[in-house]
Length: 130
Image 1 (cartoon, rainbow, N blue to C red):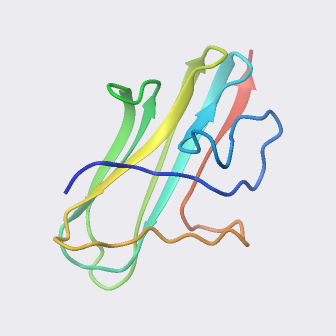
Image 2: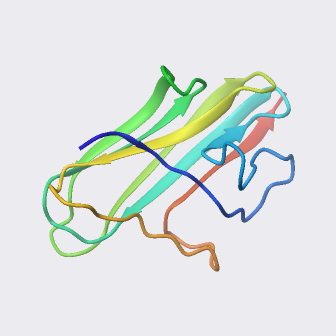
C-alpha cells in the first residue's frame, strides 16, 4: 500500500499556534525556534494481517526528511499500536508531519477519540529549550 500523510482536525492542547485544524492540518509548526520533543502514537484498527509502519518527517511535502520510524507486524487479536518520539532542533517555521502505511491488503482505519486524551492515535510536540 502507499504512504499516507495523516491529517489532524482536532486539537487537545496548542499554546503556541503550532497547528491549524483546517489549513495544512497535517503539520505541527515550530513558531518559536528551539529543541522540541516530538511524539506520535498510532492505534491501528484490529486486523491481524501484514505490517504497520509509522514515521515522523521534518519539512517538505514532496521530499521530507524521515527522522524516526517504526515497522511492526500486526497484532494477532487486537488493535496494533506504535509509539515514536524524538528530539529535534527546529527553526521557526520548520514543521513535522506523520506518515503511515499498512500491508493488510485491505483498508483499515486509525483509531481516534477526540473527546479523551488516552492511548488512541495522537501527534504532538513540546518545546524543551531555546
